[in-house]
Every structure is written in C-alpha cells, then in structure tokens.
Image (cartoon, rainbow, N blue to C red; front, side):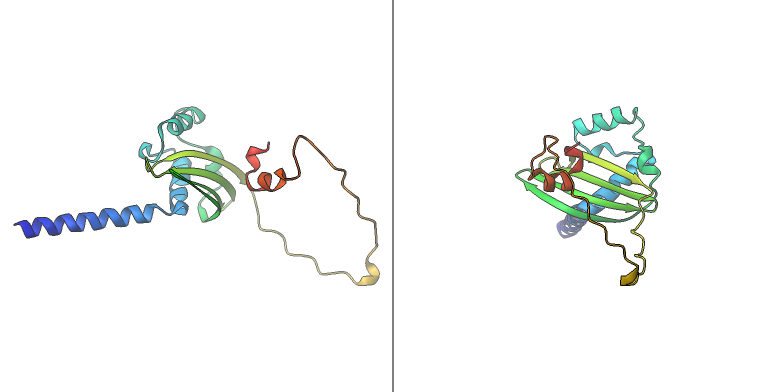
Length: 172
C-alpha cells in the first residue's frame, strides 16, 4: 500500500513540476494575459493584488480591454528585453497579432509567482514594411541636400534616447 501511495505522490510532483516549467516561459504567460484581456476573463490567481485592482479600475470591473480585442489572435511573442531582479524579472515583449502589434512590460515575482506589474501599448493596423521600390537609374535621381535636424532638448539628454526607444511609455 505504501508503494502505491509513493508512486502517486511522485507522479503528482512530476505533473506539478512540468506545469510550473511550462508556465515559466514569459512568452506563454503573455499569451495567456492577452487572451484573458481579450475575452474579459482574467484569472485573479495570475495577478498581484495591486495589479488586479488596477485591471478592475481600468476596465470598469469587466476585465475586457477592447484595444487588445481589436488586434485579434496572437501570432507570435518575442522577448525584447529582460531585467533580472532579486525577487523576479521584468520582461519587455512584443506580441504580433492578426491585426496589429502590442508592446508589453510585465514584472513577474518569484516570491508570489504572480504578475505584479504590467503595462502595454496597442497599435492597430500595424503592417509589415512595404517592399522597396526598384532603384531608379542614376540619371533619374535628382540630388537634393538633406535637411539637418535641429537639436531638441525637450528635457531629454542624449543618453535618454536609447532608454526611450526601449521603453517609450516611460518617456511620454
């Protein structure tokens, strides 16, 4: 009887371990988050208390984000940045959808095993870059001087450019 019990326990531990491993891929976690936001069925066990309250506030307690729903099915997710922290990591990711693109930053805690921070920006109708036109003959090209852009300060230093390209919503 003890042998059967030990086998069942071992199988249960293997099943739990494989589930945790599968869920640790931030791309799959983001796919789940997007699906929940597109259907208005967020799982409260996925989110920290403050983020859960923010989702409720932003969606009038529906959990539904129409700007994500209009983008359609997620085709692929790419991790563009990863910042390891003592109690988790923050990921910058891009999700390509059927009808646009969404850009995300999510922070996942290793202490709570929940998403404690999330931010996104949706761009509907984002299409792949058009194919380049054939190069004109050299004789057909009219040479014009390129305009020189004027320096702008706008409160941003030269070094903030890279950070603003990586995290544009922090620079608005």
